[in-house]
Image (tube, rainbow over all chains, first blue to last red; front, side, top):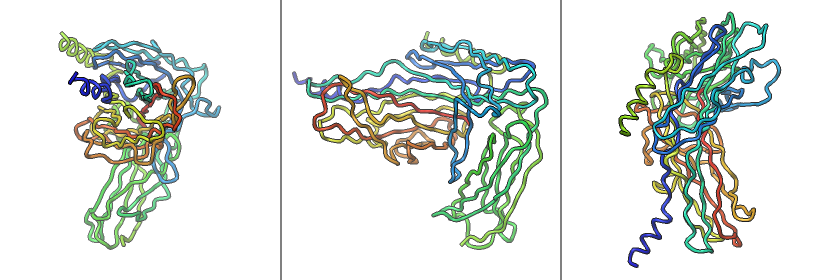
Amino acid sequence: MKRAPALLLLLFLPRLLAAQGVLIAPTSIFMDSRTRTATVLLVNPNDQAVEVTLSTTYGYAVTDSTGRFQPWFTDTPDSTAPNAAPWVRIFPRRASLEPRAQQVVRLLISPPAGLADGEYWARLVVLAKGGQLQVSAPADSNTVSIGLPMQVRTILPLLYRNGKVQTGAEMDRLSAATEGDSLVVRARISRIGNAALLATARGTLTDTAGVLRAHFSLPVSVYAPIEPRFSVPLDSLPRGPYVLRMEVTPGRTDLPVEALLPFRVARDSLALQVP
Amino acid sequence: MRRFALVLGLVALTSAPAAAQGRKIRVDGIRALAFGPLLAGAPAKVVRTDPARSGQFDITAQNNDLVILSFSLPTSMSGPAGTSLPLTFSGSDAGFSQVQSIGDQVAFDPRQAYVATMGQQGVSSIFLGGTATPAFNQPPGVYTATITLTVMYP
């Protein structure tokens, strides 16, 4: 009987999930009109079976009025949107991955005939659900108990390139303003051409002596114009005049080099005063 | 045997078709948000820094990778005979830790998207708290709802 309190305590300890989720590779999918296929590898590295469901949708990352990124998705994009989601077939769409098992998923794209040159976009959605969460049993018939199972959805970019594709960068509205303990830099970055702009945005702050005082860098994927924010801690910037230089350059460390399209660097600068 | 199977899996990963190679991501649900037994009429709050009751997800990816996190959060849980129990999340109920430490989190609003940069170790954690508010006449039983974490590569 002495064990009863301990057993009761165990009963209501939060249940550890046998970790649920899958490993997915790659994290960006590029397809073109020559191959029209791609593969994605799913691995269940855990001790619990995982149910995986794959689908496609249309969307990308946008920035809100404060410059923060957020996802934007729609199942009914504008008819002029370069939406490749309906053309993608997934084999298999559902899989049950036993512990330590893997599954190669094949993607086949079937675009309509006469498709104009350009890049078309979709998002691969991988939904992973683990086994049923055990819910603590009520201690007595008057108890309210809660079970909150968790699932994970991973969304990866899928870019289909048809014929000749090109991209370019434009930057304007460069600004800087103090917000609390930070200098917040913003710039509008747009793409030109018929493909997404996969780039890196970099900024530097130099003082009047030409000494580099701060710098920042961010990989950006531009599908629609974005106006991201970059924060520089003010404690790294003594009061005084500075020159802010910003550029959008080709090159991404997180994407395969062969998938990157060349473009001319976009630059802008402004003089500012740190109060 | 299990280790052998894992090695086989990793070998398979490295010998996968060319298009499947490259960066990888793994997101695991580690610990469910747990309130324990509730008393009717008494709100129960779990803070994101609670090492035993907060929800936890782990993300394994390339160091410095940038991902956009967002939650699909239920506003209530379904219970016996069609009853429901309100569940709320406040502006600081989620936290991101680049170093997987519950004591080293950056708070964020789980009702909005959050841009996270993976840490140097490539494994980061997301913690989640919340508040359940049973009514005075809340029927006893088990109440459930699903929490979904979405991890998006930009």
